[in-house]
Image (tube, rainbow, N blue to C red):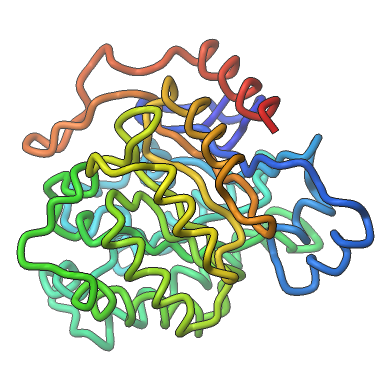
Length: 324
């Protein structure tokens, strides 16, 4: 299985990748048809769902590394938006062709500061961000005749731009909710304007950033999912209550999915239970954990021997799906 396959996939899951699925049983047919008109997850589930599970793509940067990309940079995989866009499109195409119904754009770590290191100004950064949607959309068209793969515009956390692992702590010196809103706005707006189907607000470690993103989604009126990075079966990486985080997301009508990503697999079952109990009726549960490997923010490497075995990962994915 790969990061994007909850059950199985033709692509081997590389070390450091994770499995992803949107987990939730379908509503009654009439309500599902109505919801699909303005909810891309419902539309995709109606067409491609397998037992109520929608398969997402996988570790884009991990796959790109396996194809030869050098992404050890403050921009991470977003660096290739300038240096090698064809590589990004190929990676997206591989995932769609392998069975993914949703592709997440290479904009996770895109930032003004990161692109400045490559000599790219702010307008150029926004152009690269819009390009990330185009590349995913093109890849969906190459992988299938009907080209109906969902494109989720990645809105990674502020901490990812620091390139020091802060997305796994939620420690943001000098930042507050208003500053985070201002920081996130240009990229999210560019993704929406480029025509992504929904925004993937992901790896959010703390409630302060979640509140800022909810305010932004209310402003943009764009469908999105909101997923948190967690360090236990009950807390986000900042140590705050995951139940409180899900309840907060439940108040936003634009958030059509809520859950976890970049989280050790052993915590996910309990987190899914919390999601199920606390999410809004209009929301799906979204799950794409990592492999359980430990990331060293200083050396920018994964620590050997810490990953979940593929067989165990597949067992856990079935367990997560069964919880709904």
